[in-house]
Image (cartoon, rainbow, N blue to C red; front, side, top):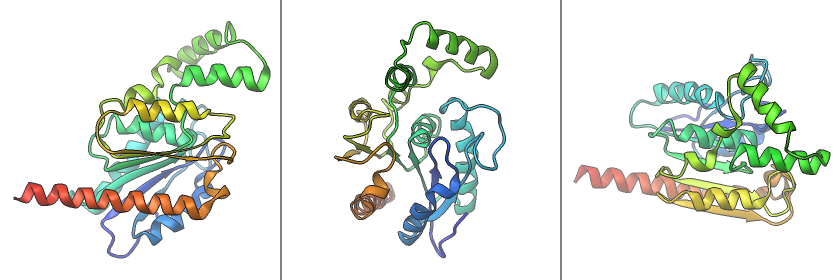
Length: 239
């Protein structure tokens, strides 16, 4: 936890798969400079966190809820709490928003839109293998052993009716999670404010490292917009 003296807003950061909380340390500094408290954590089966499997957000969204509840307790009811995720962490943040209506914003960098189609693409691109019967068997074992079905991990479905402000970031050159998935997420969100920021030539989940200045400028603009909207809502409620 990285506090900012006097700050009444906190962002919870969610790292990518095969990473840990330290992979977001540079972004943590940026958010702190934007007058945010920053909460970093290791997702299950990563870093110092326990667990023997991952569920791509099916269970992790509830883990994130624990982090958000803690952040809210530190700030009180008038505080502002948002989430940021990259890759796998972004999918977790989007799914979490569907179970926490009071989250103030979500920033999603390089998230997949739907687990099963993404796994189909991953098998085809990385191993040149067909989805059937491999994914069907994997899904069966996942339900038996890990207790989660692939078809229940669908960030695109989860955000459809949310009015939570969201910023989607993606690279046109992403070969692991194609741009069309970010466009699908953006199109699926029909309520509340949303933005889609596309970079041309960064590899998957490496947009920040590729063009740090432009990335931070986009984040700063989005964060400023969120604060403006929340202040306007508060003023209207007080009338």
